[in-house]
Image 1 (cartoon, rainbow, N blue to C red):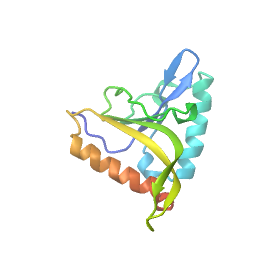
Image 2: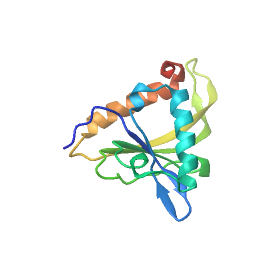
Image 3: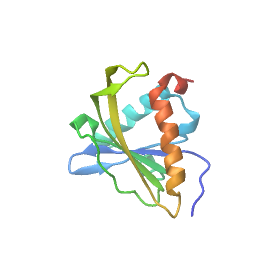
Image 4: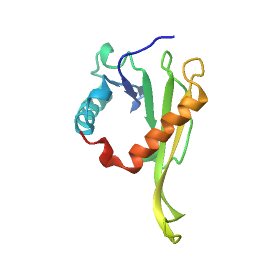
Amino acid sequence: IAYHNGAHISVAVAIDGGLITPVIRDAEKKGLAEISVEMKDLAGRARERKLKPHEYMGGTFSISNLGMFSIKSFASIINPPEGMIMSVGAGQKQPVVGADGQLTAATMMGVTLTCDHRVIGGAEGARWLQAFKRYVETPESMLL
């Protein structure tokens, strides 16, 4: 098992004839704005097939998003040697019961986390998803 000192996040990008996963290196040290700018640059160069190998190799965790295709939920296959991959579905308005007990509409998003149990157990993965949920529900907590 390889232990890493940084979060090197691979993000799935569709290209003609397949898929490539450019890597945001040391994502834990970057703010959302910096990650967004870097990802837009990497995705653009990925679609133009202008990435260098070090820009798509060495990820420790992957994210795949099919929400833009109105896919509600799906499960991704782990990209070895990574230990986890998160599949993000579309945000959709759904009826929910609010804190006041009244029916209201909320945008709900499906997320699936696939873990290699040789690296991370199911309970650890569930705790990771709980933390992810807190960040998504309170995005201001992610601002640096």
